[in-house]
Amino acid sequence: MQNLKGDIKTDQQEETDVLTLHENLCNLIVWNDEVNTFEWVIETLMEVCGHSQEQAEQCSYIIHFRGKYAVKQGSYDDLKPQCDAITERGINATIEVMAG
Image 1 (cartoon, helix red, strand yellow):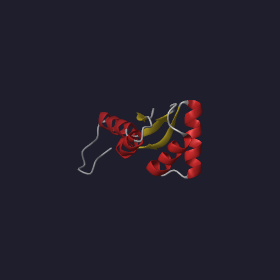
Image 2 (cartoon, one colour):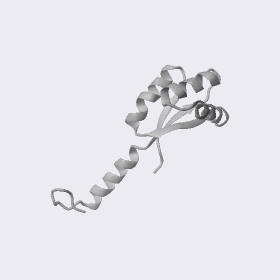
Image 3 (cartoon, rainbow, N blue to C red):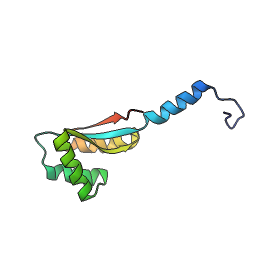
Image 4 (cartoon, one colour):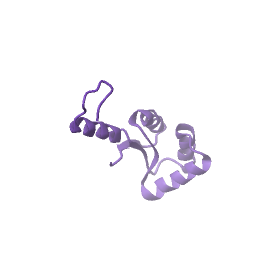
């Protein structure tokens, strides 16, 4: 493959490009606890993640019964402020790189 300058790209460069692309795909995980109410988690998901009422309710039930749930996908840079906003509300949230 040639770039705009006409140089030939090596296989190693292509592999790095692909790995970088996949490394940017992340999940925003919200974890269950025995402290926060369904109402608080639902309100948080609606305000922070832009979920509809129904989507936020479904996520909160999955979080409750499975212990955690990926409430949103995107790049680390997009998810980090949302993760911080959720944790600032006392809800445990993390960002995990998706398996590629």
